[in-house]
Amino acid sequence: MTALPNLQINPQRLWDALMETAKFGGTAKGGIRRLTLSDEDKQVRDWFKAQCEALGCTVTVDEVGNMFARRPGKDNARDPICMGSHLDTQPTGGKFDGVLGVLGGLEVLRTLHETGYETTAPIELVNWTNEEGSRFAPAMLASGVFAGAFDTAFAYSRADRDGKLFESELERIGYRGQEKAGGHRLGAMFELHIEQGPILEAESLTIGIVTGVQGMRWYEVTVTGQDAHTGATPMHLRKNALLGAARMIEAVHRIAMDHAPLAVGTVGLIENKPNSRNVVPGEVFFTVDFRHPDEGVLDEMEAAFRAALPGVMDELSLSFEEKRIWVSPAVKFHPDLIDCVREGARKAGFAAREMVSGAGHDAAYIARVAPTTMIFVPCLGGISHNEAESTTFDECAAGAQVLLEAVVAYDARSA
Ligand code: HGY
Ligand code: MN
Ligand code: MN
Image (cartoon, rainbow, N blue to C red; front, side):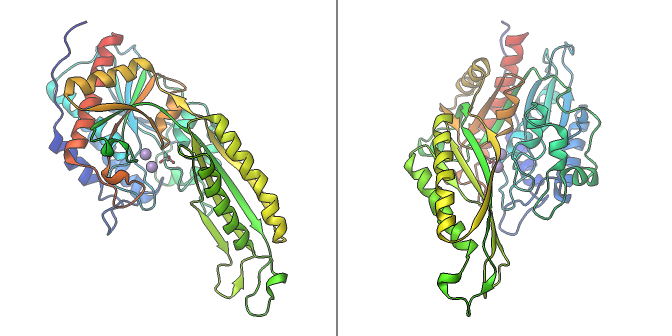
């Protein structure tokens, strides 16, 4: 195998790109609100397309808005080696979740471009639509369509809590591409991402060699009681939907604690109707997010959750509807790519460890259709999905450098 080149990314240029794009949806608290298919999402997509085209890449868009910036290689008959992540954020998101993976990949493209280094396989940088799943559930929707986990019609039909449809919002921002989702082979994908948890920082490590993603399940529950006057309605005659939801929020927490230390359970979204201070709430909608590395344990958590619901609701004379809207099974990444990341971290001189991702990522779906793996860098206090999300200039640079090393190494291996 030919000796690998000694290419170095430009840390300042990467940091400048991160800070420049943070203005698209930037918040007063220093975070980002860039919901999928919003005007802010359009702004960052337009910026991303222009930056890639300035490097001579061709940018294509598929029918669910996934963006592919392609840099030719010596042998363009080969399937492309990809780098990818997402540019959408949570409502109170930070500057690095998803963005670091896309802009770290842009920095790799910029480094290859300015050094004139030619890979054998073409290289593609991907912005996957709707990774967060905050505006349109479920998460990782468009990488899921690409991987065949969902069909395009399902994605188009997803509505946000204001009733706006994915399809019409995609049209509105001008990113409904022609290419069939998944009609595009990938040779491999590497995703750089902040860890979004506390492990790397706690162990003073710079690189996470990610071996897989834990299993995830999302549920939606609607509890129905009866609107009533808070002053004139005696306690024993009430049908208080919010009380029923409150007891289930506690139950979700207890179920996760019963499967500690790896299980997590969260009620993150709740809508209380009519949400008036002097009306006993007659209807509540809430979501449940369960995660664990072992599918069998997730089955137990799901069973405990479903067993708790009837008792809680009967006791309060409430009715309910519950449905599981998403299952993302635990995923193992590809050993050859994991090895390229391990080698890249060693070559670049960064302390690293293997780990499983607690958060979901597009890589979890792309692993179904191409050899895939991820690279983590620490984030301050393990905080993410929070406007205070932060990582350092050096850690961003380390992640992008390892991404470059891994992509070039895999290209050399597979050539
Ligand atoms: O939910 C997740 O883990 C991801 O951040 N969308
Ligand atoms: Mn993310
Ligand atoms: Mn996220």
